[in-house]
Length: 145
Image 1 (tube, rainbow, N blue to C red):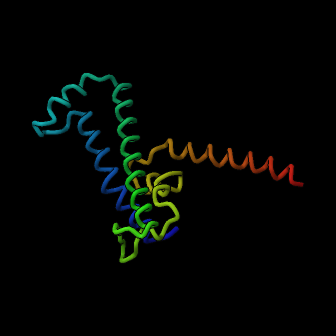
Image 2 (cartoon, rainbow, N blue to C red):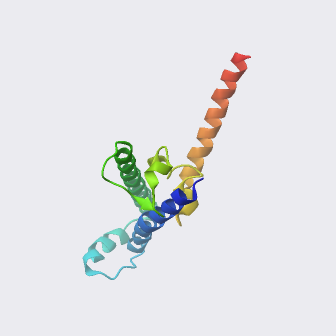
Image 3 (cartoon, rainbow, N blue to C red):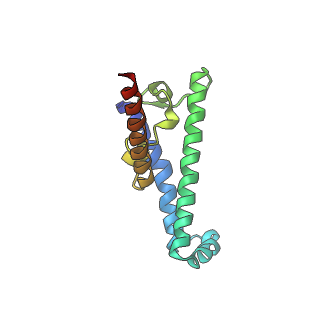
């Protein structure tokens, strides 16, 4: 773990992902006052709880994909010596990672560690991946002996 990279990760998740998901919950609960969202809130009010969950899942996936793609672009630019530099405490964050876009994923990733909405599917995906790797590496090790 790198404290500067994690400080950026916490900032990124808490200032981008969490506010968008908080706003979604406000829309789903008809909690917004702005006139330009009243029609949308009225439409969402007619959704069942199951339909609202589909909306939550879809929006969370869209946000996560956008975060991944943005971080990938930053990493790609840094690796190519491009002009985009994202600094935290004077250090270029992309240089502190071998794949900035991967830092958001897994049970040790930024989403799980820093978000108010920690994405239980990330924990499950990580658990499955660890079990899959252990099982397959275990088989290879058994054959190697």
